[in-house]
Image 1 (cartoon, one colour):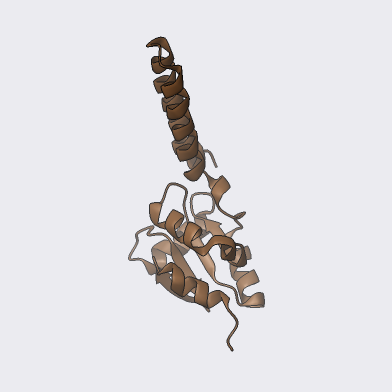
Image 2: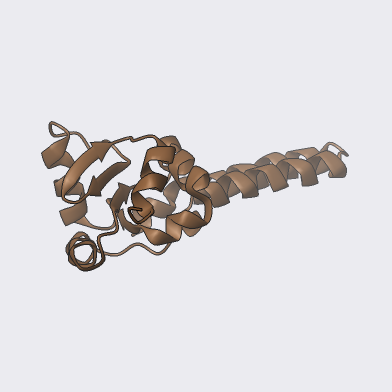
Length: 145
């Protein structure tokens, strides 16, 4: 669990250090702007941006029951962020598995990506799709007409 928070915490500490340096230099406005930037970067790289993660086994069980795709992701991954933001509210319609919190999820990703933990890996009807186009993923959420 702590691994997922390393990047956001480091960004907060760096932002605080840079802002402190700016305040000492007599630039409080610039310090506030820089601190805000670092806080936003920390937030985007934290697990808070994503819907609540479930375990890989639970996600597979739920997906089998409701047919919704399973997304394997990790904090700090720019491709995961791109997928999350491009899906918008539709992201709630997916089952999200944080591979840094769930060893079974990491193993599932490695099994389909030649031993690499390449994310996002989206499973639709049991078939893996590595770093798919967000528009395609959105289509998978829509029921067939």
